[in-house]
Image (cartoon, rainbow, N blue to C red; front, side, top):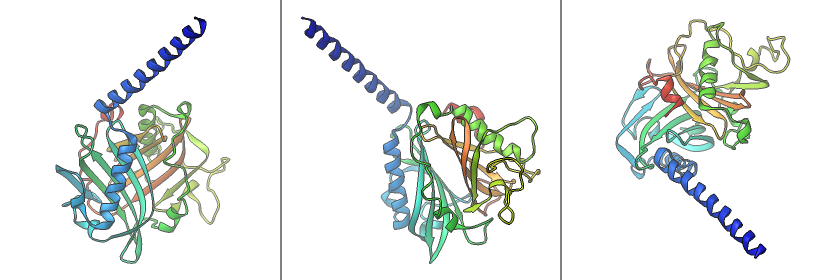
Length: 297
């Protein structure tokens, strides 16, 4: 009888665990998207891009596509010139059903630094509703695709332990306040890891390096930005991958350049930054996003 009671307890616990898993999956199906599905759909998008076959994708009838802030038809722009993908990294926001990818792609024998934010329809979980792309080419700010390729082994996609994750509020606040530091706003403070590093269009700009030396006397490597006190345009949209510890901010850098910054965070501190700064339209082509909307999608 004692063994039977233990068996019944075991079965009960297993059943409760199954109910919790099913409930979590059901809740996610109603309010968000599954990570593995979004990752696969993003891979399909990139394959369609280099194959120049947008018709192979599941696109919402009202899909919106911008390239460097300019709204154009799907199939135009970089769709016509994209070549082999040399490296890519993708992060996922399951709560808003969106993904972000940074990549280095060949174009007519040269390399470009590419980025794309994809938004998916929350009702069917499959069709693409938003495509916001960035293409940085030779001549753009600090352009160095080789530098991005050299960071291919950086850990952006791997999931971090729960105890090292930040809230959506904390991640959005860190990204937003980062840009306020450009203006030397005394009311903001951003936590950086002691050995934080930053790349802008593939060029390492940690600590404002000049001739290999750091301008800061503080220990470690510095990611805190300086200069550009005229910068007034804050991030307009955010994509948050809490499980991977990544937040992506989209903005017009210095009010003029279509830009995204990827921030990798652990234990509330920024440890890596990858930024892509393009040229193009004087606008972003997307409406401003409220702070609350970013935190509570």
